[in-house]
Length: 371
Image (cartoon, rainbow, N blue to C red; front, side, top):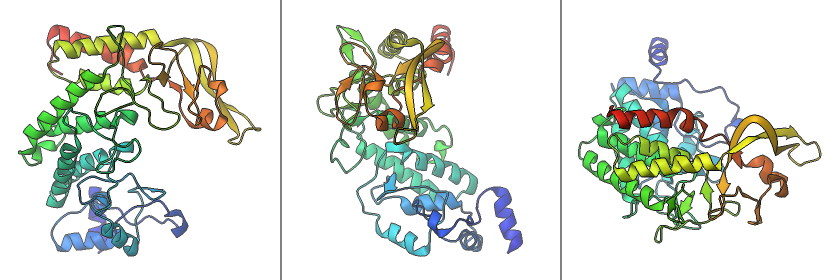
C-alpha cells in the first residue's frame, strides 16, 4: 500500500487527503478519501487524478460547471465527506452552470491535461461534454451568456466581464486547432469549435463600440439581441472597459491570418488605450483606521506612473466611478469606501499589451511570420 501511494505521489496524480480541520472545509469541494480512490484506481488498472475526479462529480448534467454552490465557492483543493459528495452528485440537474470566474473553461482545460497524463477515458469524456455545453450555450450571433440555462437577472447578457467570453473562445480555439492536448478529443468537435470561434470573432467585431464613426473599445456586457452596451450590477453601468478590452485585443491578435477588419479593430482599440491612459497618476492602498475595512484606496499624482480606468463614459471617454447607488461620479473619492477599497476601479491592464504584445503583433503581420 505504501509503495502504491508513493508511486502516485511521485507521478503527481494523486494527493493524500489534506490535514484540514472540518471547520475549515466549508468551501465546497468533491471527491472521497484520496488514498482509497488511488487504491481503487490501481485495482481497476485506470490511473486517476484526484482533482479531475472532483471535477467530474461537480459537472452538471448539462455539461458545464458551477462557480459556487450556495455561498461556498467550488474549490478543488479540499476533499469532501462521502455525504457531501453524494449530495453534490444528487444536484447534477441544477441549472447553475456558468462561464463566470473561470468556471467550465478551467475544468475543461484541466480534464484535457489529466487525460494526457492518465489516459483515463472519463476525463476525455468530461472535457468533450464540457465543450458541447459551450457550443450549446452560444447565441446565433456568436455571443455567450454568463450562465446557461439560467437567464435570470443579467445572466443572459453577452458577457466579456472578467474575460468570460474570451476564455471560452480560447478553449474552443484549442479544440478547433487540436493544440494544448485538445487534439486527443473527439475529432467531430473540431469543425464545430472552429465555427463557434468564427461566430464569436464576428460578435467581437460587431460589439466594438463606435463613436462618431470611430471604433473604440468594448463594454463588459451587451444586450444579446440588440448588441448594445448593457448594465450588469449596480456599480457596473454600460461603459467602455479599460480592463476586459485588453484580453479581447489579445484574442484577436491570436488569429493567425487576420482579416482587414480584425486588423482595424486591433489598431483602433490600441489607439483608444493610448488616448485613455492617465499619465503621471497612480492608485494606492492606504491605511484608514476610521473606515469599516480599515483601509482605503486613492488615486494620486505620481510622476512616471500610468494607469487606466476600469470604466469610461461611453460618449466622453471620461473615467467614471460608480457605487452601489448606480450614480456616476468622476472622482474615486466620491463613492463609498466599501466599493473604493473592495473593487478595482483603475489598473495597469493595457501596459504590457501596448509595450510588448502590440509591437510583436505588428512585426508578425507585417513580415508574415507564423504565430
